[in-house]
Structures are given as structure tokens and as C-alpha cells.
Length: 507
Image (cartoon, rainbow, N blue to C red; front, side):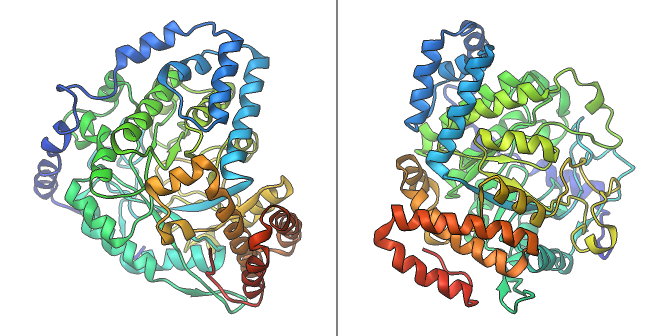
């Protein structure tokens, strides 16, 4: 591969690492020296809410249907439900909440890994620095452009999650340069139209406030940092104290720094399988509530990946906290009910069958055609769907093409949305959350979803997928005619222009 050299002197790495953590960018958020994550309270609350009363559960479900964030106590009640009938009721309401806030739209995206260098030693991660079986590199800007050309020109993606490791070769300047390189790519499609990535979400290590301000200026989408586990003793055991990631509070307050820096949308997550899944859900909801109370807006998205197979990583097979499918259903359902207005990301770590079962429980986003090996999109024509254990962080469960995923979604009644209008029109942060809570965002998103779906079907879909998509389009247009009569004619002019080959129209 034509890559940047992965060789960085240890002295350079050590000097860089020592400059990363700034205590004043932690302590400013503490309450009398304590973090918002009160483990004792979480444990006590989970124990205190055992054997919940069905009437109490129903009252909480009605609160979710009113699009109100749940308290930790209410979340604990739902986590303690064991009755199958009551769980089924929770799942049904979770689906209703998603439909009420987000309609039948599913947003798709692709992950783009720009390197696998890392200074950390996370026990569960294939990128840990002691893993000598990994081929290490960072993508050059030319490679970034080629990957982007495939993603947007051949596959048809409009959104990416760009993934960076914690290493001086992937510092904030590299992030800025690579994001600009992605944004500059504009590719002609087979129909003679053009395609471009319009939203780059970023998954990165914890950054300093000034660095986050620089990322904000370059125009990022959602900024993600996952805590991995909220349980402090487990965190310490899995992340050695001599490494950057070993600093629990520096990571915990990543989103606070991002919001202080002016980043509109942030994303949180936990890696389920490191500790008790009920505790981790409580940690996520405590985190979401803290951001909403302090900054007036909670996380834009919540992710809930399960730990999957990682080559040359014994911990994955040794953990006592693996999450079975039944527990996974419940944790997804509870997250949806606890934060009814927040986006929920279902990743390709899961198999296609699991994703079919979990998606209706309230998920709003999913990746497709995912490749996480380095330069794996550019090489996809040669290696097909095979995964590259020598360069990737973990093994995926669902590597189906975007075309196949969209066809299945259409057959299930979902419309795939490629809309990025809210991001470009300033409907982000608190603005979009208020619109989601009151239902106004759904109307705009329905219009834009149909237009962007039309684009993708014409430019990228196989004949089979296009046939399935046409049925969804017809149904959606009729719904717009019935429910939004005042804008129907105006909408149809945009729709016709899109059919005629104009691109990037939005409301």
C-alpha cells in the first residue's frame, strides 16, 4: 500500500503523549471534585427497582411516547423488567417512539478508517500497540481521496464516519487535512450526474478544546468518543494507567469539551461486553442527561456495539460479560425509550439476521457496505467481501452491499434517507433536538428523504433494488400529498427536477 511511514520514534510519541491531557479541561466540569457518573447511585438504583409494577412501567412508557427523557430511576425500572409480555409491550412502544420522531426513515453511512496506529494498550482491541501481528500504517491524502471516490462514486454514500486512532501521526492537523480531502472529492456517476460526501462524522480520541474548535471550523458532523465502559474499576483494568486512554476522566469529559468548543452534535457509546450491560445502559443515560442539563442538548446519537471477534486478542474470548441476543434486545429497547429524541446507531458488528431483528426496536442509523481494513474500499473489486485481519480492528458481522441493504429495507417498508440538509441549513444541536421533540423535523426530513432516495435509486441502484424502491417512493409521495397538501406542489417541482438529473436539492 502507498502509505505514510508508520515508524515514529518513541521519544516523539512520549513527548506528544505528555502534552495531551490538560487537567483544567477536566476539573472545570467537576462538581466539588466529583464526576457526574455516580457509580454507587447507579448500583443502588438498579437494586432498588427490582420487580417493577406493570402499572409503573406503563406510566413510564407513556412518558416516552410524550418524547420526554427518562430519569435514571425510570431507566432502572425498565432494565429490571423480566416478564415477557411486558418486554413485548416495551418493544412495541419503542417502535412507536421511533416512528413518531423519525418516521420510517433509516439513515445509512459507511465507516472510513484512516489508520491503525495507536499508542494505547486496550485489552480488547486489535489496534493495541503490543499487537505485533497487525500491519500498521496511516493513509496518505491520495489514498483518502481514492477511498472516498469509491464510497461516493461507486457505492453512493453521502455520509461517512471517519475513524482516527490515538497517535501523533493522526493529530488534529491530519484530521483537518483528511476531512478537507474527503470534502473535495466530487465524482461523476454512471448516469452522468455527480456525487459527493456531504457529512463527515468523526470518531476520534479525546481532543483539547482548541483542537475541537479547529475541527468545528473545518465543518465536521457529529463528533464521537465512546467511553467503552463507564465502570471505573473495569476501565482501569482494561486501559493501563501509563497509557493515554488510561485516564478515565479525560475521556469521560470529551463531549463536554466538544460542546464548549461549539461542536453542535456529539455522539456517545459503550462497548457492550466489557462489564454488566445494565450498568452500561445506566452510564449512557446518566451521560446523556448530564449533557442535556449542562448544555441544553443531549447527544445527537448513541451507539451500542457489542464486542465481537478480534484476531489475536485473547480477552474477547475470556470476558464474563458477553451480551446475549435477548439482553441485547432489551438494552436497545431501553435506550430508545430513555432518550426518545436521540438517534441510535446499529452497527455492522452485528450479523444481518440480528440487525433485521433489532432495527424495528427504535434504531435510526446503520452502516452498510462496510469495510474497516485499510484501503479496503479501493481494493474491494479485487478482494470482494473478504475481511483483512492483518489491518482491521475487529471482524464485522454484516458486510452486505449498500444496494442489498437498501433493497431489504424497502421490502420491509423503510425509506433510506441520504439527506444532509439539516446539517447544511443549521438545523443541528439544540435546534434539531427541539424540532425532533415536537415532531416538526419529521416533515422536512420526509420531503428530503424522498428526494435523496430518488437520487440514489437513479444513480446507483440495481434493477431489483430500484423496483423495490419505486414502491416505497410511490407510497411516500402519496403520504406527502395527503398530510402536507400546502407544500405538495412545491415538493413535486423539486422531485421532477431530481428525476431530470439535478442533484443536491433540499428543503
